[in-house]
Length: 95
Figure (cartoon, rainbow, N blue to C red):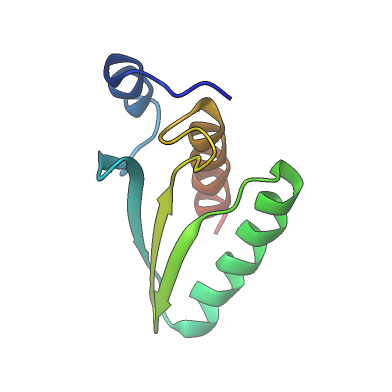
């Protein structure tokens, strides 16, 4: 997997809403009605991440889910990160 350049990252960021690039990773935060809703979405994301063999760094406190994506093997952002970000957005939109 090839690490994306700064301009490639900036161009692809236009295709994902609510994601930011800093600290060598893509970041977003989602807020849900309650813990159950947040955990349900995390479960759905976990299954998709496993299929893609690309796993997020994330944390959950009550109804908030914070997600960071980076391809550690490549030392930065790759197309895999944007693919998973788009999948996560599709899951969230379906809620």
